[in-house]
Image 1: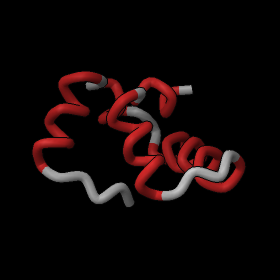
Image 2: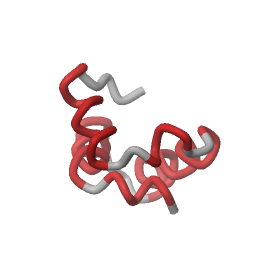
Image 3: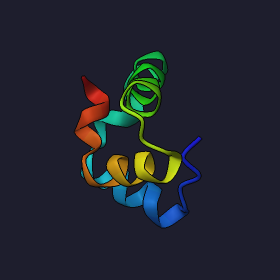
Image 4: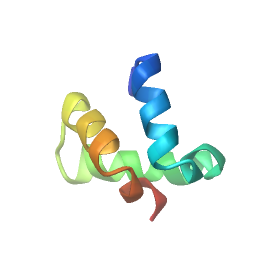
Length: 58
């Protein structure tokens, strides 16, 4: 969905290892909110994920 490179996945896991075990439904719901309700496009959503991954844990 985010089309992350291997380097981006490693950086994300190092920064927020909790995301790996977080419920996929919650991640999808948060992604939906960011894209559809807030109006960010895919590239912006990916950038937010890489810079502020904690947002997906709420």
